[in-house]
Image 1 (cartoon, rainbow, N blue to C red):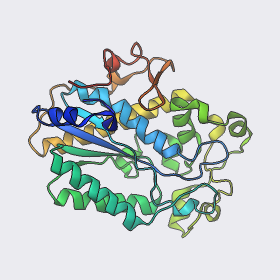
Image 2 (cartoon, rainbow, N blue to C red; image 1 turned 90 degrees about the horizontal axis):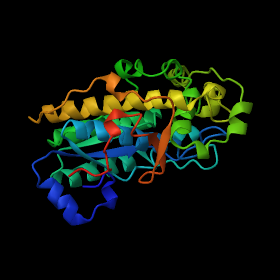
Image 3 (cartoon, one colour; image 1 turned 120 degrees about the vertical axis):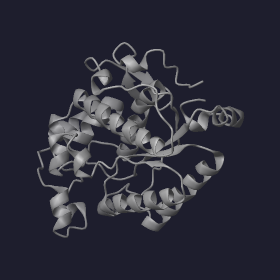
Length: 299
């Protein structure tokens, strides 16, 4: 089974689903919306796909076959609607799509769907939580590391925890690590720090980025971003995604074969290789122990 779900022919999927090994479908959830004057509109999609790609070898090491589904690139993005390029859809539309995808995966015999989400618009997060509850109610396991929950938020960067983290140091570092070719570095270095907290502004009733203090659709400190920080954040997010998958499978009686601590996710420096499957940068096999010998396919 190929790591990229859509690259498989149907007999390959049939054989994987009949192999006796649990098959997990990872669904990257993002948005098409403004991310400052320096990051691409598909920033969240890039981050979610890269999180999923980092998780693949960790899951394989545990005897779990995983494949990355085509991403959801359109989600509720009301706060950024005033900025050109933002495409927002209704929460009901997004939720219905998620429920239908999960129902189809369940019917085919996948063991679990894992949501790799990096789009934290309040309406989107609320919709995802509702969808997860409804999918689980059908008996289909869902892995959903919700990074807006305090326990997981505290594992990420200080900027992320502050709430001043849209197209700031946190997200810019992630894109620099995965797709540096899409970062307008001259624009990034020209941006002034914007410590306005989105979470605080939302709590006070702000309904747009402009009302929240982001007239250029960014919050935080993009000038301080680095690919090294992005790699560390991907490691953390991938570990959370893997833990959520293990928990979801364990609830259905599946057990994993290998226990891997965070130290084994260490990436040496920022030496990266280009991954043609996703068009993103991943650690060289020599830097990431769990990438060694990983062909991008799971037998």
